[in-house]
Length: 228
Length: 405
Image 1 (cartoon, rainbow over the protein chains, first blue to last red):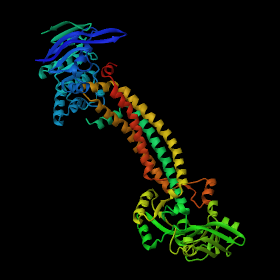
Image 2: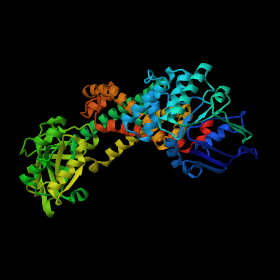
Image 3: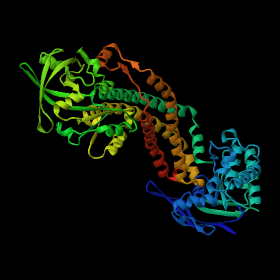
Image 4: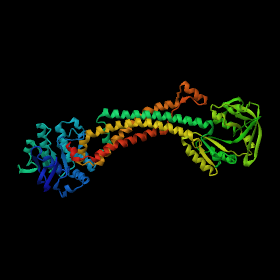
């Protein structure tokens, strides 16, 4: 089942009166349960594409349909709600809320969704146990390692039961062991929860785990291959 | 997590900075409370001194009397009249006066002055008139003598035991003329009062002006001057439209103007303190915002509405003000309480002037609620003002640029 459908997507910036085509006519689709990596050199347009997919940035033209909703047509206030209920985000720098514990960081999204307390607690505990942090529920981010923080970020991204998770360079700040560990967890969650994961990455270890690799250069898809 | 709880935790991200900011607010609240308490205590005492010197807190007249000061604008109070006034909450004492102008004459000296008919006992309870008797004796009820203010006695070469002719127009144009013995000479500390005229027992004054039991004014003392307007309204309602009820500041607006001028001067000083502190809080909030710009953008990215972020930041700003106020009051209130009980004695040079006027030579303090409420409103207004910065920042930041920053 198609989760994301992108048609003729353009993002053009004006830079000193010259036009920069950060995304240059991309058409792609992602199905439920995909584990896809978007790769390419720096400045190729990976992050811009992810930002547009996540409804954080507006395309210059083109159409993005998530489920049945054309998100490029949504006003900003509706877009926030749409992101809250449909998209999970994992950022390169983890970006957990420092004053909240691991448990509270995961619950935060469900708080915004207005979920009942019992459901929040059950889901949080399950997710943190799935990412191997069942014993660190009450630890604040500054008491967790980078790898642990990123695992909390993954649990937070999944807490809202999104249609898909966007991860922008999720392993860029992690050592090999943490990267391996995080990828295993994300793959396991992808299989268990059947949630689509889309990464932008330079990291060959991530590429190795991906089941679909999309290569972008100068804002264009130059290769789109299923690995296995 | 509830917004207010998250805001509280955010406040303590940088403990030292928050504590310094709160300490600045505490300092401002303490200083401003101290100043206000001293001002209000001083004003309160000044008003008390002024009203007990002559006017009382409230006076009841015939509706036309204050403008005409005519002996024709009198009224007959009757026993019910004083009962109604005395039963009004906050009223501690009421007593009559009959005042009009008269011509004083002795030998070849003639002078125009006021004849003030008083109830010697009740009058003395409030104005302590007997303390100014320099020569002779104070009036007894029903006495037929006069007390003469010093300057008048001097100008007319009068001494105790002399007699003086009073000539005036009495009630409804009757001719009033009588011979009065001088029972005492009054030496007031105020030159204005020393020119005021002569005092007589109210029944004798009534006989002189042919007003019988009628009076020109009823002087009223109250327990709590801050409830004065309320008391005035109560008395007005009870007495109806046949009477005019006036407060001391309506009768002597110049004193209130002086107090207002002094208050205005102090407001400028307090405003400077609070503006400095306001900028301190603003500095802290700007730092807090700049440190968390990206974090706030992430919150919006994951689905938190800007309104909720603004609410959190509002609580953070409010907490700084709230902590400052609570700690400022905790620090200042015990000191104020002590100072209310133990007013500060004035230095000798100032004390002399105060004592000359029969006033206590001390610096008084007040714990009246505006002393505290004004600080609460001011700090609250500052926090609202400061809060505009995060409000505008969050409302206007561009999500993608902030995420990239």
